[in-house]
Amino acid sequence: MRLSVTARIALLSIGLALVSNLVLVGFVWKRTDAVVIGTVRRETIEQSDAMRSIFHVGGLPAVVEAIGHARAAGDTSLLIAVLDRHGARIAGTIPGGLDLPLTPSLFRIADLDSHRATGDIGYTLRPIGHYWLLTGRRLDLVEAERRAIEGALVVAVLLSLVLGIGAGLVLARYVGIRLNRIAAVIEAAGEGDLSRRVPVAPARRDAFDRLANQLNLMLGKLERLMVELRLVTDSLAHDLRSPLTRLRTKTEQAVLIADPATREAALGGLLAETDLVMRMLTMLIEISRSESVSRDRFILVEPAELVEEIAELYEPVAEEAGFVFTVAIDASAPAMLLHRELLSQAITNLIDNALKHASNGGRLTLRLVASPHEIAIQVEDRGIGIAEGDRAQALKRFGRLDAARTTPGAGLGMALIEAVARLHNGRFELADNAPGLIARIVLPA
Image (tube, rainbow, N blue to C red; front, side, top):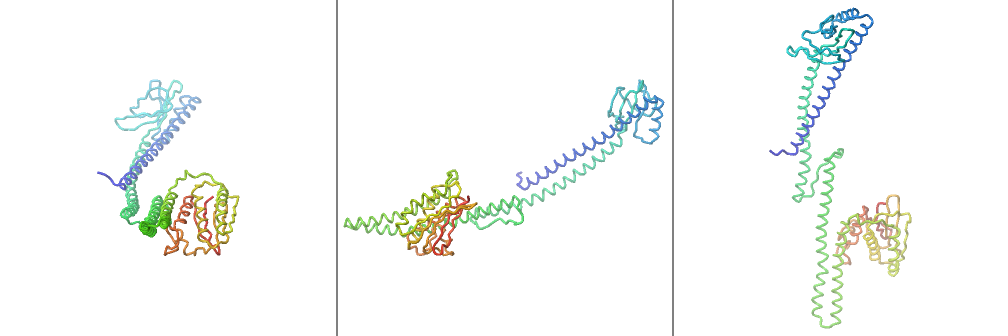
């Protein structure tokens, strides 16, 4: 029979509780027994030492007298006697049937009479003159205490077993409920419903909540990717339809043109349309690659040097386009691990966008700003800018502010910049330059 996970967890918890209680009970029993026997041993040896001291002072008569006083105290478990060299009793009392080897013994436990179950004795046998001094105690009371402790420990084990079973059932039910909630969300996701989430208690942060949070984050990302994938598919089909239609029409027209010069001009238009389609596909590939680049390809880069190199390349282009191009670099920016090629392309995209959309000229600034925790690489223009409500749309893949799509471009440039910033654990922001736009890549330092 195959047990469920919750049943195995319950059995495991019961087993662990039982084993731990048995170990604890065994330790308590062993420790208690050692303490009791140790006490008897110490008292027996002290009694023997006292009697030997009396013997050295007063001889055998003094010992006999002391034994009489000791027996008069009414302690029935006490054993104290003087034996001759053959083991015969001279003074004191010894239990019947006691047959001890007449050899010196500091402390020993002996079975008094196993047939009558009269219990054990702990004794000390030491020579005094020509005699043997026997001191000890019956262990009947110790045995009784042992049995009482053992009985209590058995009851404790049974109670712990019952409580362990109860705790195991409660634990199994608790784990089962939490796992079933997570399994239900995963099953729904497998059937295509990515909108469901595992409920998480805000005030509770146990392992199940961490698992649920990670699962919810994964489902949220997967849902966004699916929505984005549908958007990309729809937008790609929409954006490719026009150039492909124009390409087909121009091809048909070019085939019918007899004049070589006119046909050559028509073929030039075909190449332009083909280049537009190729740029869109290339940009999509670059975005996909930037989202899957390994951090192993990051190298240590001086951001100030990188921005300065790009500024030197674009300064003549911007000035030729009628812009006043300025560069402001904070030299305190620290060296960072960056993907140099992708970040360079993102910065050039920022400048290209500014040259394209701020075509009215004016001042164009490439700026590097450093702070203790992050750096910002931003391009500031004096164009028409982007309204705050349209900025989120501008950052989406194929997100174009021209709903009619009459302006050139496919709405992929900012999506690539945003992907590169995210690759570096940073962000891409758009802000108002009053007038104009500030497009900013912010990277953690």
